[in-house]
Image (cartoon, rainbow, N blue to C red; front, side):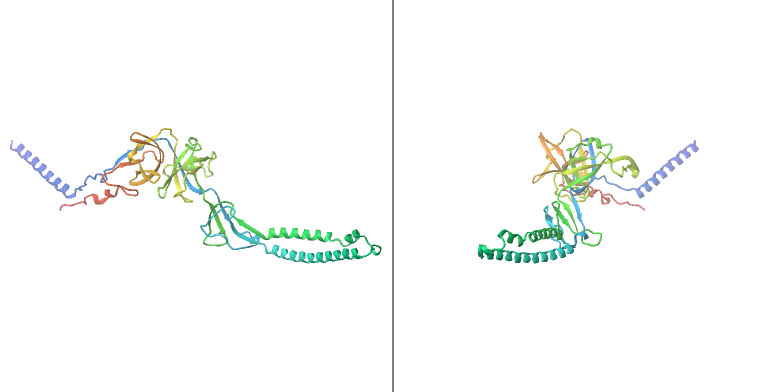
Length: 378
């Protein structure tokens, strides 16, 4: 009996020691993490899922042309335009002068001048002969008036002079070659001038989006479908339309698939027109979203902001507040139809306890400062 009591006391002692040791260890290594609440108190409206086609592309000018030196035209004159200047169609850029033609023109001009003098002398002699013939009595005249005119005719000389003038006109056309703007646009003159660089480049003032879409989605697109176009670098958004769909795949063929592996899917060129060029620059990379579903998107009217004539909503885009410019339809009670500008699963900010603005980082308060440091008890 005493032996059993001793064993029981031993077990109790071991348990007490184990509890004491475990508490000591836990108290010395425990990390205290406070639960972090949303400091902004934001209420969201999530845009429902809808069928969409994504187009990746680049902003390009409708027309673009480089102008390079043409030795065959002769010596190039001074530029008549400046870098960055906006020009109209037909405006003069610069002029070439063909020096060989200029020499021929000078020689021809001198030759014509001599022939003109020769004709003047011949005409004077003819007119004098006719005058003298008229003074002679009829019985003393040895020639008729018609014979005098024929003998002293300048017709051959006149024909030769006329041909020379035609040659001069042709030489004048060949002497100068004017290079003018074939379309309206903006002039870009390279800073570094070498044998490879153009004299200037003309970029039209109209742009479009040249993009691609994969073979799964190309059949879903149709001309005139509305597209929401976002500039990747700054999230600036505009609207546009599908203007052209090429049914021939691009030469590079396959697109990159998941995990960087090559995909067997082809990509097809697509062109999108732009409803506005404000905030758009040549070369911008963009992503366009085309909503191909027929369902209408209705959002709470209180989420809509207006600035001048622009309507927009604020969206939590992976922790950053961004502006989505939207096009509005009819208002239905407390909601308003949005015809373009939103993407599926967009987190629209309805309200917040603390004011938020475009560009604000919503996860600023969830950094390491919000977590207590590790404390160790000796």
